Image (cartoon, rainbow, N blue to C red; front, side, top):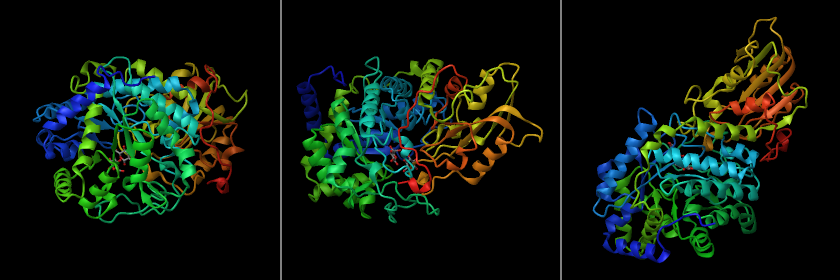
Length: 580
Ligand code: BGC
Ligand code: BGC
């Protein structure tokens, strides 16, 4: 299947790029190689320096955070880029990893772990199409997705961003995302996918995360459990790297991937951002990738305390665009000096810029630099939310429970609900939602599980909710529902050595056990947790992953309108010792 329907032949694309490159000054070329965070650059600087891309990091939102304000923000940058001397449009990038998830009001889909459980490539393609449409409503044209990590250690805080520990499943669903983003219904409904993070980001060893004291405010935690495996070192041989972690990239390239994001992690001690063999020899050479490579956030700066040396190392290793993301003028100065000192060959700069421009031409960015604000009406619309609800429904995995425990009866006289996750949109959505780390509480419109139950149960059912299960002493019911949930996290903040349920959760389950005949536990988590402490206490246990805004997909199954469908995307550990 041809993933990019270019209106021009390869020869015509090349000729256009070559003609453009011939007109460019060195400064304009270096500008194209820069990707700057939106609060660290003005539209005027984008115009004056011919900046190649602007991004929103996690939580990089306008204020107020509405779809219309997003559209205005991105439009301002794009208009400025078009006023640059050569009028080269920008890519506007954002981490749309489960819907257009920074935007308040967007449809939030289950994180990839749930889609790995659903195992439905057509569904994933439709989700990516919706994501593309909601992005283009705001003029954003580059999604930092799909993540095709193959996580091998569930203590990793990014486990939920990977579809599965199984390479073949990751490849299949990664391709579906690329197809959905890049070949959505109409030609102007297409965004660039970024396949990440190359390579073996999911293969790192616990305890190998480094720190970088020359980067001010480098995220680190006083908590010794955090930042322990994320961005670490993959200590595996080349055969394992090629068998477990590389295939999703081959599949992505075959499906038309034109951008790949390089991983913070190292392979046997050498940072991927410095890895000429893997980036240039393997990916661009052997695998024939002729799109462009983008760095991760500050990752080129991790290579050396000297900014120029970091940029030289990364660009010579094969990076084409640098997610700087803060220091635009210092980046320009450093790379300019490196070229004049012959630390970077001009031919390497020309190759990088050729690759960046090639993809801009292929995607028709010069003809259609803007998205389509008439799509604003569709952001978070019912049709999109129905697809999210379908995804939630299909992602649920029944870990324990036989009829007659489930389904729940619509007509029960009373239903007890407990657990802070039951009415907490933030926990339901997890990290990478509105904020980088996600957030507790009412962060964006949607339906919580409590609301979904209230909408589903009959009018005569008394639905009682208390987060702590602190009901009056005599309150009993035939069935009770407890929602256990992780507090949201992203990246190394979510690294955890111990995955057992916290004692408060175990106590809550015990308290609720005493109040009902049938106890159903729903678990919101970004990875399997060790549930041995409650397994005997509950009659049914459902893994709901990080479902996103549409919890009615859960009641669809709990009340028996649909069967359980999901299968485990990761092995579920029994006991802490079984972990990694
Ligand atoms: C940004 C994220 C970024 C992270 C670096 C945060 O401050 O908001 O987008 O991924 O830093 O890991
Ligand atoms: C993450 C990437 C993300 C980038 C921009 C980094 O910290 O590793 O996955 O795309 O930030 O937010």
